[in-house]
Image: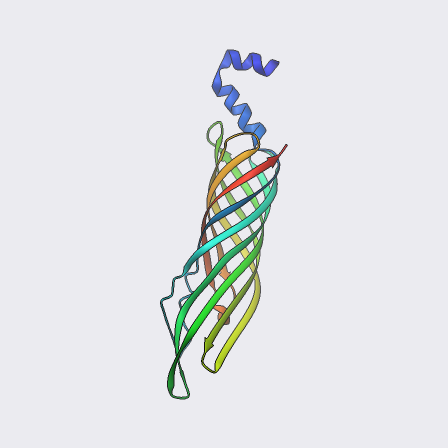
Length: 203
């Protein structure tokens, strides 16, 4: 009742601000879809030549967390960065043979999020946390096949923006970097992600 009276007196600015603060709290879950870039995925070992290699692929993430206030939240997520593949030519026993090479990666992450509301339903945010990744690489040539799997952890960070359509439903767009994923023998390198996601807040 008091809020309705204040809205009538002060107008939409007060009502919009109250909505934003109420919406940005509670447990939430969501999914995002975007593009992952593997900058080092098309780098080959000595004696191997790669061609038709694209270092970008579709990525998706399932995430959930808790927004303590309009400014602070924690979040856990599972990322599938997809697979990068290419044709490969290598020298084996003095002869050149053709085959293919593949690199794929997934990662769990735990991050803290700091948000800055800019308007009644719009805010920008930054992410800082840690990831635990699994990287697989393989090379298949006639008579020669190699594969390697590696697990590693490191920090992760990103920037994004969120728009809350209602108290329960929001849309966000973000850029995030996962530095030094993998190992030297699995094309170790940064992974950059650009994604758009939707979230549902449980209230």
